[in-house]
Image 1 (cartoon, rainbow, N blue to C red):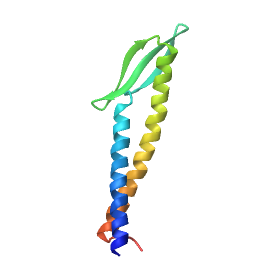
Image 2 (image 1 turned 90 degrees about the vertical axis):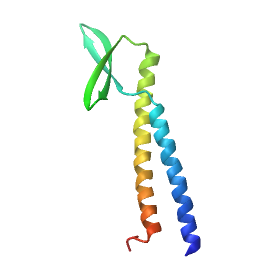
Image 3 (image 1 turned 60 degrees about the horizontal axis):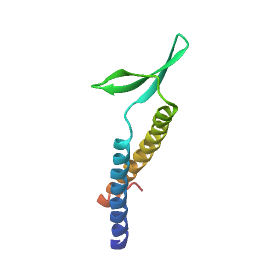
Image 4 (image 1 turned 180 degrees about the horizontal axis):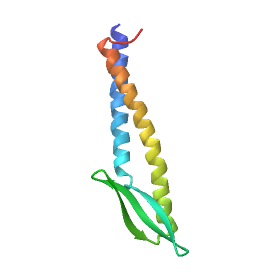
Amino acid sequence: MGVLKGVLKEELRNSLQMKNDYERELAELPRGSLARKNIKGHNYYYLQMRRNGKVKFIYKGKLPDSEIEKYQEAKKYRAKYRKLLSRVKKQIRFLRSALRGKESV
């Protein structure tokens, strides 16, 4: 049983490291997402984000395609990292309970 516990502890350490990596990657992404509004035939962009529990729109004006693409990529990566973070958190909970001996049979 000692070998199995060692493997579980190592897996737990790896999972905790992955969790920290995912959280760091999420923190490095630009906050918010772009909202496009068409006013009198012209597209204007607003940065949409939460502040103090409320949704705020910050006017950005007309943006170059490169800036728009940056926010679209950030949105994809944010979804990806949130999904991975959710999985690794479940794995950590499972490993901790297995190491305590409360594993379901």
